[in-house]
Length: 374
Ligand SMILES: [Zn+2]
Image 1: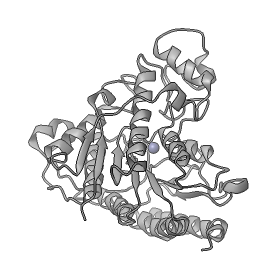
Image 2 (image 1 turned 60 degrees about the vertical axis):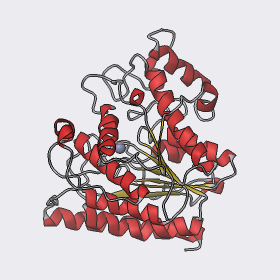
Image 3 (image 1 turned 30 degrees about the horizontal axis):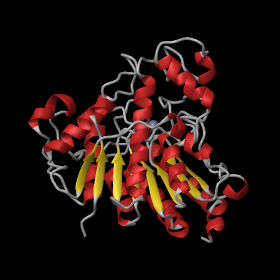
Image 4 (image 1 turned 90 degrees about the horizontal axis):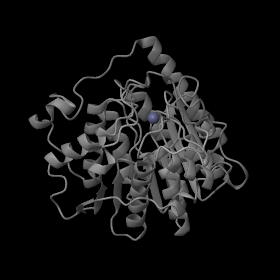
């Protein structure tokens, strides 16, 4: 059965720069789009290329404080009146202020809201906003390169449509901002699989963070050891994710598909290849649940373009050719779409990674599975 898909993109999403030396480079979105375009990904009428719209201040206000929204707008315009430190902005840190910041952040949040609307109204079965997935932003401050939390805003919209939502976050970092937004809510199951907070920003995302009140048992964290590879990753993923999703039976699945888990990503230590990544994405696809897919982290630009092109191929049920177009060699290299080599991890590190993953899995089964009658 052919699936109806939407890819939310416009070049306005990829032209801003946070700072000259900042690892988050929005041009990666353009590379992904150009790679997909070269494969003819938008030539079928079952694959819609849809330009985003900006989120309104009222929409942003469903999660973010009025104060914070006004401060972001003021910094964006280069105006004064707010203390950057109060909102976790600084010139040289993770969250710099730049001209046009409000518009850029409101556009990527609006792209996720538009994608959510297309899913809720059943216009499409799957929608992919590669500019979204900014999972660290908090209600009242920026965090981890994220200004507005588009996954949480999209989930809030879906809840307003009386839909139950499972949120699956496979970014290398813990999806702390999304977890925080729904920590006491049993209408949203959040699952985050990430490099352990013992070793990586933001330092949270441990198994005991399982929710509070009605939300107890609805926040799931699967922390992994640095240098975890495809095999260990996928074994843990299959033990935890499909049973919980099946038991929760959501109306919509929202996924944050960050690819900073990639073995050559400069910010993290996981050792995932395109093979492991695609297998995790194919599993989501097989559930056949209406699917809002978001981007996320990813700081190896070639890996981002190739992995998200592969992910959109999974959404369309299409296998792109392995040869990369010569016209994009400068941007994404002249290798192949899929990785041809497997990173090698020393045996003792691998053994530690396996034990760490198995321990996380066991602890989740004890702490969270009973809530879901598993
Ligand atoms: Zn990340």
